[in-house]
Picture: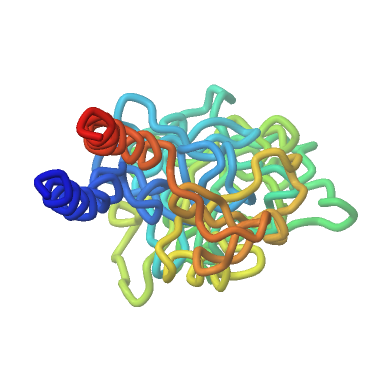
Length: 321
């Protein structure tokens, strides 16, 4: 009789303790890929963790001593802001000229992104690049690639950002140089769409500046321009997969074994669920047809409970029989 009551009580205790491993498990999958760097939140489609985020943005962002950096072929840029609702990033290049400082050592990054990634990561239409000290035989003036590319005096995009106003900056203390009508202008303002790559070596320029506007904000002059590179991004295939994944408690990632530039149409999307991965969402069953597998920690914990409570009961029952 005492043995029967003991078994009932311990069985009830075991049932009460079984949910514990699920409560004690690590961060829920929906937060597994979200991270922070300094004061910036890194979330889908970006990630600093391998396998997380969309494959189109893999190996792009790196957190170095609490500073978020974006790395592309032209160099590394500090990420000042990620605007998820408007799908844009604001970048800073320390070797870029501003209104207060003119850098003409030819070592600035410019902006060149991988061809396969350029379809969904590129400077915003309202971003104007002002190329400085380009040689007369630069492709800018000799035809790019087969026709002359006129420099914009004051660009129609970017809220009037252009070289004519830029010359009024303190950085141009003595104003632009002369040289006559045949000489190349000291500054040539272009939109990114016109050249597709701000490669200073190829364009034979000594430096550059970049400024953008945030409509409908209007500024009075170059001192008030927003200096930096405003980059727009888009997600190949859209957000439908990730929304469905997160709605069922999963975290959005990709198959890291797929080669770079492949699967960027979303075909390599993965939803990280509690203890297993899905190619749809966490309400689906895994590839073996089984319901969600219990995590290793849950299995160990359950085995521990069985060893602590059930085995003594069996031993006690054997001793009393």
